[in-house]
Image 1 (tube, rainbow, N blue to C red):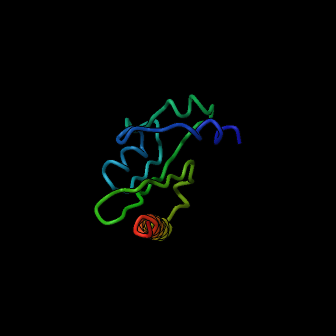
Image 2: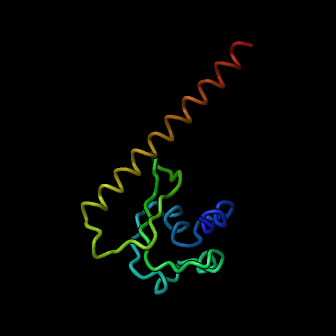
Length: 117
């Protein structure tokens, strides 16, 4: 919708907002009420005209570095179980592996093209 179009080109610095904090520290963060958390970047709600209430943010980690984050917004925390948290973390771990594998294949293809010349 309109909010996703607004956010398409928005970039947070590492350490800015909930997602930035997760990217910087490489740790999962579950925030049931974002307005009580000083890490929350209120400017995003101001830009989108939406009201964020809760966030679950999980890092995409590969080896010792964070490739990105996946963030779920306005999740009903009372319905989000430890098992679902574990599943989300596992999904992020597999996504990070897939990203690293894709990067490796791309690098191999570039090297192959370079070696053929």
